[in-house]
Image 1 (cartoon, rainbow, N blue to C red):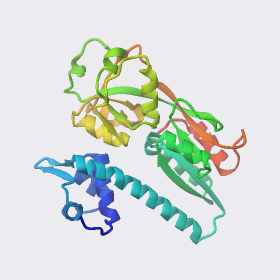
Image 2 (tube, rainbow, N blue to C red):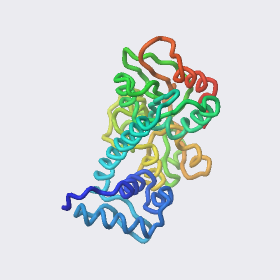
Image 3 (cartoon, rainbow, N blue to C red):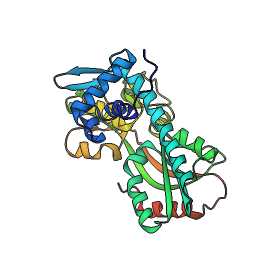
Image 4 (cartoon, rainbow, N blue to C red):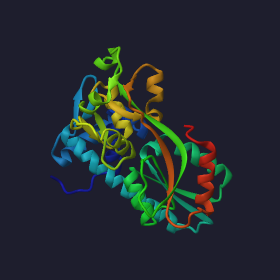
Length: 301
């Protein structure tokens, strides 16, 4: 295998296929013509000496090897973005800076609106957003990499301070052709626990909430562990299997009839979204202003 460095745009394409379920969608989001995207992936396959995409007349999906490479590409791109953030911060003096950590569900569905409103009120503050799962956000708050974090984990480790800023709910979703979609009776918690599910990786707030809710039941091994809500949603839409997801992540698809919510008798998966920080009980400065704004806005996408 060639030891040349891969190009970052093709790594972004590979991660985009993982997140959005097809090369065409990944190319569209990257602003790249699909023939160019296809050539870039083929060049990467030659460089790595393996097939990364399984191609068919209906589209392209990652091979098992491609899924592994996409996982590591995601980490490389995340670290590279941090490098660019650091370089940008060193290039010019800032009147004020705010580094925010957010778990993936919050970052994808809520942070754009929150930060947009904050920016209109505080245009002099430079904002850096880092997106990780809840456990990783805690680690970055503890190490003071981030000034404030927003997570959906059911617990917050000491010595971090926390404040409830919004509420959210998890639901079981399936493709409309799934057998559960034709059930007349609600699913039982035990049935859900014994079913292999599409789940997030350990450490995510969504995974932790589900594990806590089902901890007293015998559990089936996960059908698949995926690194983002977008990847899970794409898999459910493709009929791979059922999943437990935030209503924020599936509202559009449920409203369009592309996914069906399954009732589970006796299972409530309401949860709180929290701001977390380290230090004084009262959060001050730009971080405090952001938390106060978020509490006023709540869970509005």
